Image 1 (cartoon, one colour):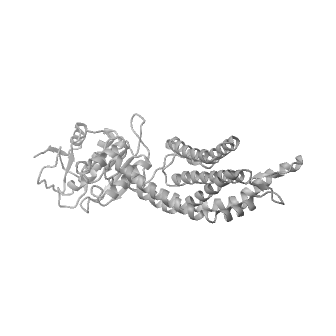
Image 2 (cartoon, helix red, strand yellow; image 1 turned 60 degrees about the vertical axis):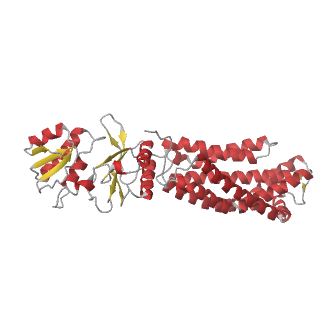
Length: 434
């Protein structure tokens, strides 16, 4: 058997790495072409835009902004046009990013990705407006006020002011992006203390790399200040999320085995297209319902998503046979550290005509791990007594044509300890097979 080294969704088409790289290259190329076209269009009106921005940034009563280096000013003009072009091309870039990432995202990750992109584009626009009209003018005015006490007359380079302003505004947008990612991941129950280091490494790494790329190389003090401020703000806003307990849902509870290990058992109650009956899971088991998880890729992805988000260590299927499912789906569950087991209820429902679910209940009661063999035996004996059963048939496989009477039941592969307990309560046991 080939070991998996990553998570494979049921909907994955198993395309080669090169085909993914080719698709990514096409999408990036289309975005770059659009940015270039929009940058050229914006270049015709960039002077008016920069004139407005510089008038807002000017801290002096009479203008004290000058152009000391024409070549730097020309570069700044084109940089500004390119950034505006990138911002206006962002919706198209987001569509391309989503279409590329969608096949490899779990349902909750897909929703979070779309929500994050929509929120971030809106926040970026608001951040730019507020930065240019309020925050940066206040910051330059505050800095200029230090010159008044020294008697110096400030003269400021327009290109340098714009580059610093771009760096600060860019940092604000990146900080908002990082905070939004952490918040959405926390609300979606994708982020908790157990995987917070994984999220920290990627969020801080990407954010700081982009900050350093946009920061003027001749201003190390600004780079240091923005780095510390950005990292500090992300940690402050993510304080509680980074330290949150592992989320639980679907009624999952933490179960302890005899060695003190923690388990989370999820009962996948699949209707199997109406063949599998509904029974009550054991106390502590989570319950998630499906119509035909063994046939539907979307339902399989939902189960993988739930197992990953809520740390299920075992999935018990109601009627689906493990061997009837795609091997890649079972391998994905194993990759997530999740064991699988099936009660085979769709088969048990065919061995009697009195519409009793006692065989199904016994299948549920006999589940072990994390429960002990003794506790499973006690549950089975209790169910046998409640149902007034007189005969228990058992074996490794349901015999063909088996038809049980009302006071009879079937148990698959019971341990010797259970057979002994059944004999002690005066119920007959008989092994049968084909």
